[in-house]
Each structure stands twice: as structure tokens, then as C-alpha cells.
Amino acid sequence: MEVKKISLLGHKDHGKSTLIGSMLMQTGAATKVRIEEAKRYSKKKGKDFEPAFILDSLVEEREQEMTYDTTRAQMKYKNHAFEFIDVPGHEELIKNMISGASYGDVALLMVSALPDEGIKDQTKRHVFLAKMLGIENLIVAVNKMDMVGYDKKRFTMIKENLSEFLKRINFNLDKVEFIPISAYKGENLTKKSNKIKWYAGKCLADVLCNETKEEPKDNKLRVLVQGMLEDKKNMYITGKIISGKLGVKDEIKAFPSGAVYEVDQIIVKNKKAKTAKSGENIAIKVEGKINEAKGSLMFPKSEKVIPVKEAKSLIFFVRKPGKDITANLYGNKVKCMIKIDKLVETASGREVKRGIAKPLEAAHSTIRLENPMIIEKYDKNRELGRFTLSDENGFFGIGIREG
Image (tube, rainbow, N blue to C red; front, top):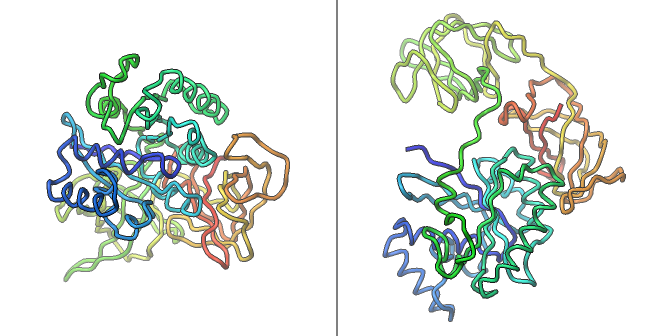
């Protein structure tokens, strides 16, 4: 059974952890022991039962009632399997949000229906990042409907306001679904709610079942080398197929060594295989001497793949960069320079003319590498089209190749 990955986005306190806790209970994925533990902890804190405590297993998170790191929870519903990737909503934890969102097939955005909460700047930034990272299917769960009397007008207002922003950042509204829910009360999660009769759509879980996984735009063979493996007789190249398909007798070329190999044997899950496909970890026995190292890239000998020293990119800045900038491309660190061409305010989606990027803003930029590297366009190959950026003080941003 294929597991569909759901990136859960949204501002702090809008109910992400509560949603997962309630879903775990309603689908039977939460054990009685864990539920009882969450009930005891809720009582200790002087609260009514809080479903979020089922998810926040770390004491530090419970004490501060926030999720600090990317948390994953799996559940099954109607012969479908889901993995929720709960990413932090706090601005200072945006790096974790980036790594969490980038693994999702679908984004589920939580927006509180309360007038003093609603659509925040951080809500919009999460959506901007999801769009930037290639997530095209978006579900907007308008939460805490119980606290506004399940008011249709409040739901409609949030839908209209957020739709305006989504159009501005070029989200396809045909792939956006709005659903009214109450994560705390468990309304409209795994069955239609009688308290939201004005809503004609499906419950959240059924909508998730209908979402289709975005397939890679490009299916050309790319193998990322992870290392070498030696047994008593042979040497193997170990790696992961990022895209495409590899077969025995195929001729492959490696970057940066330029070496050409003929595939003599493929090992997948400790068994010999005639072929291997995208997403599989493999070991390859080849003819001749092996010259590759971790971070090398392999592709068909017949294909002309050109490394570049310069690429048009969209970069999201967590903070202002310092000196000695380095780009990390699929495990390879390369010194680089960044030239900002046009800034984007991520909380509004509007382009601005300033030349300096503020924290939590994005910029259409030109990245210039010290050494040529293979960087694919992100809409063709996510793994080879994105990179992280760091300086003398560590991580400061993430980029994707646009052109």
C-alpha cells in the first residue's frame, strides 16, 4: 500500500497537532495507552482532554505546548495510508518547515476561523514555500469552526481572502479545496458533520483519499552516488535512483569524473534485479575500476548533460546572508555568489524593487558557482533542482533553479 505524504502547514496555535491527534483516534491509529497518557497529562495541566498531547511526545514540547521539530504520524483510512508531516509554524523554525514540506505530496493548510487569528503572515509564507517547493495540491482546513458557531459567513470570508492571495502567487485554484472542520471536537474529519449541514463537500479524510500524487515532470535517469561497497570478490557503487529507470547492460556516465561504466549487476533490497526504478536504493556492479565518490551523479552515456556555473533561481532567505556563501547541492558544497534580480514579499506575494532581501522574503536571483555543477530545473527534477545556502554562521536560505 502506497503511503501518501501530507505536509501539514499553518500558523502556531491554529490546531495542527490537535488535528493529527483527533485523526489518530478516529482512525484507530492511536493506542489506548497513548490516549490514556494524553488524558492524564491534560488533567495534570488543568485542561480538558487535549488530542494534541497524543502527538507531542517530547516533554519539552508539551511543557511549552508547541511542536519544535518536524513530526510524522501514520494512519490508515478506507484502504488508504497517510503520513502526516507536521512542521513547525513559528518563524524561527522555518528551516524545519522547509525540510518537512519538501517531502509532501499534498499540502494541508490549517487556518483558524477565529476573528483574532485567521489568515496570518506566517500562514501565507507557508503557502508560498509550499508552492515554491513544488506542492501543487492544496487543502485548506478552516479550523475551530465550533468556536464561531459553525458560521458559514466566516468560512466564506476566509475562503475568499485566501483565494485572492493564492491567485497572486499562481496557485491553480482548481487544485485547492476548502473544508470547514473542528479538530478539537472531531467534526468533519472522518465523517460528515451534522453541525455543518451547509457544507456540501466531503469530509477531510475523503478529500485526502481523492488527492492524486504529483508525478515527476522528467523521467530521465539520474543516480546519486552514496558510496562504495565491497564484498570478497567485487566492488559496487551504492546510490539512489532519483529519477528514471536503470537496467543491466545500460551504459552510464558519471559526473564529475567523466568515467563511463557498463552495468553488470543491480542489487535492490539485497536481491539481484534486472531493472531498478526511481526512489529505489541500489548497489551496482560495473566493469572496470570505480572512481566515484559520495555526491557524484550518474546518467545515461547517450545523454548530453551540461554542468553550469550560473543559474537563475528563486531563493527564500531565513535571514540576511553574510560572507563566504556556500551552496549545498545534493551533498556537494560549492562556494558561490548571489545576485538579486527581483524581490518578493512572501506575506503578500508582491514583487518589490529593493535590492536587499529582508528575513523571510524571497528573491528571483542569479547564483554563480565557483565550480560547474549539474543543476536541473526544479519543475523537472526536485532533487537536483534545489539547494540550501549557508555562510560563516550556518544555514540562511533555500533555493530552486528556475531557468
